[in-house]
Length: 381
Image (tube, rainbow, N blue to C red; front, side, top):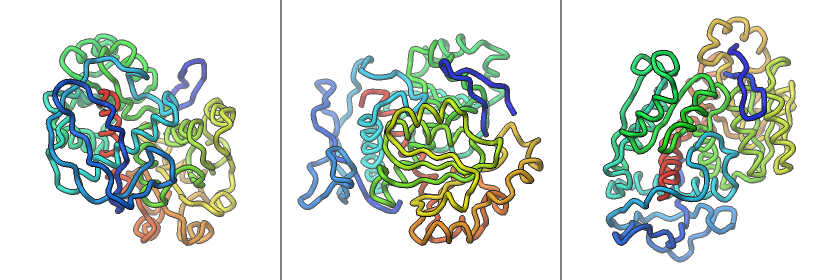
């Protein structure tokens, strides 16, 4: 296990759609004399999912093309996207709405929306990843930008060069920085010294971009996030921490079922509970946990950096595999989700991941769409 680190004043341990929908976005945000592209008015009969203003609305047509102009730097709210709980509920739902809008545009084949034209993004990877790299790089390219990949041996941030120096150098070349690192302190330091927005692509503590994609996927398939029951089975890791942070601002029922000794960080659990927004349960009984679940969620038992513990964890996690029997207890309406990569036959059976109610691949695709919307928000677009 990695050494503990501090997130603010908290001591934290490391851890391991088919619907064509789009949100109604206010036309009040114009940023310069050049016209900014906006979606057309919603067709008659469109209805918001969940009924609230600004929620996702289903429609088919893609908007017409117009030029895009960038606003001047500086806007209300955090400069960076480091933890979901840094934002309020309204902002998170607005980002999800915009993710659905841009996704609908791209899925229609429309490539005229180019808000990132002339922009560059530096992508720092201390931890390699297929989904994080391809989703960020492809998404940024599809919206007109250029991404630069910096692998584990290109920078060696914190070893070959100090994080504060890397942050300031890359800020001079790029408009935004994404980093996928081990220690959470690295992303905090990067954001503190960078003059451009920084996105947390993953740390040992949390994985906010993944959970934003998960929330988008749940909305697409269930129709809403609020009030759903999401049951996570496995290690109380960075995925769980991000679910807990989301539960501190958006109301839903979150359950983490894990073996004794593998519970999520206590301070993060307390943060979610003390917010008084969601029902939070931590249990050691997966069969009881999944009853009435809308979503059953799993992740690998040994994350990157813990592979030397893999055999030990397999023994400790006996009874926590998501198999057909567990999904039957959850009920026929329960969806299965996994952040991938999956070790089939270990934390989940092949039958479950290939079942009709498995939405792991729409979930993976939504990484790109959620991240596009996060970047649009950070640019003030």
